[in-house]
Image (cartoon, rainbow, N blue to C red):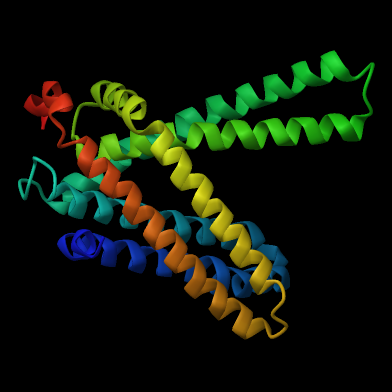
Length: 244
């Protein structure tokens, strides 16, 4: 384990730094910004949009850097620039927005079907709970596939259609491993949330949350990219090498 961390120290450092910035924005900056928005209701929409752009830009640069650094450990080596990583991240963002819209529509359809089937037999509040549980389970089940698609766009450098196919192929290899990692780190995050919920001092609570979520998120992101590095250097993926 120590050798793995040492050999990929730049990737781990990037993961921890990126999560620190995102956690800092979400836990420290966002609440202050929200209070400022409430005072300036006349420009609330503009300020909210600026905050959203800031978070998305930080996440975009973070994942581009992760892909760029992780790519040095794949069969691509040091062949590409950071600009090429930005282009790959842009392609994934368009893909992600598209599948998010489709997924939201499917969830809406599923909810409507469940309500149509159960509304004559079950109370509305119970139906809501059933829908919420099924939606959460479905979302967690889909996340490993989305992560593998992110890794595919970040590390394979295939054309969009081929990157999607490669991501699906990678999901077959690493799905349950990613699912286990997601569940473990969700539990870790929930545990941290329970612990910080008992802290009365708001500043100490916020600092503890930033440090805790940075460590949890940083290690989780690092492990996920290590899986991606392994997947995109395995002999079973040689049919994609000509596209790198």
